[in-house]
Image (spheres, rainbow, N blue to C red):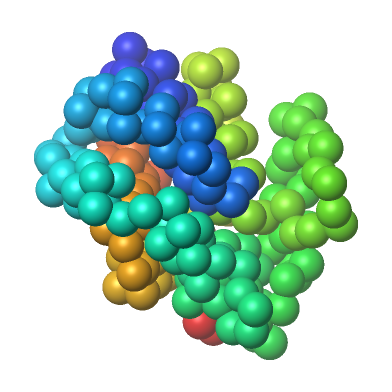
Length: 202
């Protein structure tokens, strides 16, 4: 199983780049030309349908359509179709910077990880969490991986991926929502992780 960690690290790194920064033409071109998606690892479930959705979207949707989808899903203005911060799901008032945000920050401090962010923003953004997960897979730190999944991601990530897959206007984000759900489900099973029983409010 540990021999799959490098592939999981690479997949989480790509997902970070999909969900955290806004899309740019160079990144979309790289996804199209590199063949990376055709080699997407299936750790237990077949990712072919999700990959096909992304590749079809990259052929059919122009950059503006994908960028608009990013904003309506994760940024706004107004309400977002798929809030990317864990605390929105775990806080009774659906607020950012909630208790689970603080717990995540403490976990990162324990791991010696710091974020250099351009703005004062919640650090429990799924893109940032996936970046940390990528780093832990690279380090082979199975204990920290299991804690991250059980305490900080799996309790709410299914609400996020469901929102992305149902609310996305492009196959690009719909497919990446599906790939994220598949990857997390596969590693939950492989590592026998039980998500912490957090109450969700969204």
